[in-house]
Image (cartoon, rainbow, N blue to C red):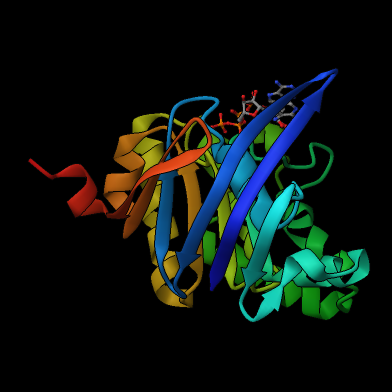
Amino acid sequence: MIELTDISKSYQTGSASVEAIKHINLTIAKGEIFGIIGHSGAGKSTLLRTVNLLERPTTGTVKVGDVELTKLTSSQLQKERRRIGMIFQHFNLLAMATVRDNIAFPLRLAKLSKSAIRSRVNELLLLVGLEQHADKYPAQLSGGQKQRVGIARALASDPDVLLCDEATSALDPQTTNAILALLLDINKKLGITILLITHEMHVIRTICDRVAVIDSGEVVEMGDVLDVFLKP
Ligand code: ADP
Ligand code: ADP
């Protein structure tokens, strides 16, 4: 479902150049929950953001489903991005919009009819357990509830892939577990492929099938979670 081939990314800051990720190859199967773990600065964010080309890799190709994203024009890419949802550490909700309107946002962009948006949003509210909170504003929600809104919004256009950027790092342990359970439930129910980055071992152990350990921009270990972390 996701195929990254020989991905590198350099950032230019003044006259210095930082190679944030180096020659990464990664293949993630449909329906898999794949985790990338590493210290701060290891290159996790950069790697995750190449999958939907929020960061354009300096070299290498990105394929999602059957489509090679790295060779698309920007208008083609915009359309393909609807197949890739994303959630964030700090939720990135619209503060001036209600829960309902936050979730509806991508559907409005996709120009769905009002009635189609209404019924899709109701479906999503139910899926993430926010039907009682539809008319609240983000400031009236707990962190876990905010992330549920983020998840519902990311799933609005029924994507094949969900990218999670430190999605539980701002949450307490109990809320983290509830959000991980929701992600697992969504993975099972919808068959969606999940790629997540985290610095927390607990997240990897709780929901991931496979894991890659990244250090200084390179994959230093990769395999089934049980093999990578329970080896003697
Ligand atoms: P992580 O997500 O693992 O913390 P990042 O992908 O954010 O790692 O960063 C990897 C490296 O690339 C770090 O050295 C970071 O400082 C650098 N970096 C990330 N984004 C930029 C940027 N926009 N400009 C310059 N350097 C960056
Ligand atoms: P995190 O590690 O939590 O993902 P960071 O603090 O590393 O977040 O990065 C936050 C933002 O700053 C990102 O958009 C990243 O691209 C950018 N960034 C990170 N490191 C640098 C850097 N050395 N120079 C410029 N921008 C950077």
